[in-house]
Amino acid sequence: MRSLLALFAVLFVHFSTVDDASACSCVKSTPTKNAKEAKRVFLAKAGKPVKKGDALKQTFTILQTFKGDAKATEFVFDRPATPPCAIDFAEGDLTIIFTTGGEIDPCHGNAPFASQALDLEAIIRATGGTMNKPQRKAIEDALATVLAPYKRALKKVSLDDQYNTGNLIFASGKIASEGVRFHVVLFLDNGKWTVIDKSVVET
Image (cartoon, rainbow, N blue to C red; front, side, top):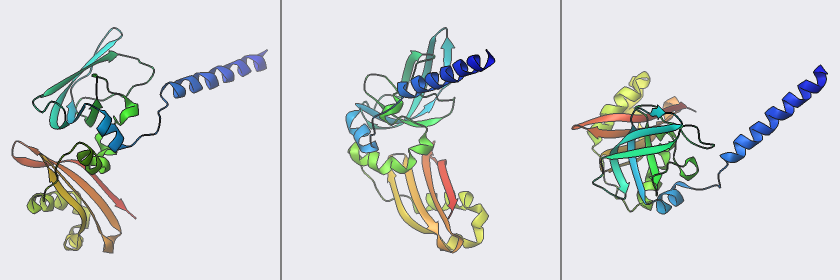
């Protein structure tokens, strides 16, 4: 009897897992495709999610618009609190939102900004944005902090890519002598460049 109950338990967990996974399975896409298909694309900061019954409301502060209404300063997101497929953002999280009808679909590129940062250039190009030469001083100041453990080798930093678009600066590169690769993303907040994303990897 115990063996039979154990078998039913295993089957229940198996089929529940399959159902949950299939509910959120996505057709493979690209940042370029997501940006071209969405009517609005913008960098935003998540406010506090407010749950009431089976509904969830969350207001995002728009930091930079890549496509769509450039005058909008907020995006209000309403959805069921427990949908079969969704992505949740904690208060303060950054993300580039791709939306058409007010949805935030994880199958259309919506994810935490840390996983979107390296796709920033593709998103800018797909939305018709421009990329300009960034302020070298802003990058140097950021790298002095981000690469502080490699302070003695800062003069050996080699930048592979760097650009400015609106209130954002992206820079990536390496310190070959240390076997380090990095990228940083800066945001101009009240006249001051602030690091909003970074990655330092020893290869």
